[in-house]
Image (cartoon, rainbow, N blue to C red):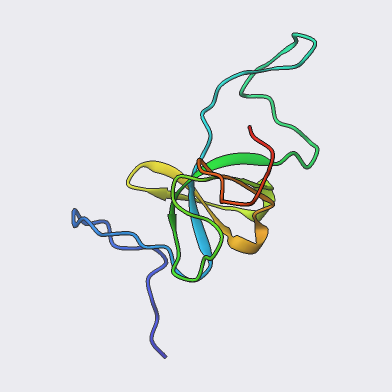
Length: 116
């Protein structure tokens, strides 16, 4: 039986990263503070206990993704995402089926929708 190392070897070789299957690679939203409608400031360090979804910008999509393109913003639950470090930057990998909404820059002909 062949055993593989627990982590990739730490060398200086630059490697290209591709997303496979129906996965979507998303850049996490900025760590800015939020303000409620009543004017209460919620710091970026505050964690929410509810199932609050998060919006993130798509940087790359896998070959089997049908409804999402790079540059779209997607809504998903943080529990459905895998947090990964790529060359010192944090990204999320989410399955297409775990995406609840897509906000794209262009409107498709004949379709209406809500705008952010």
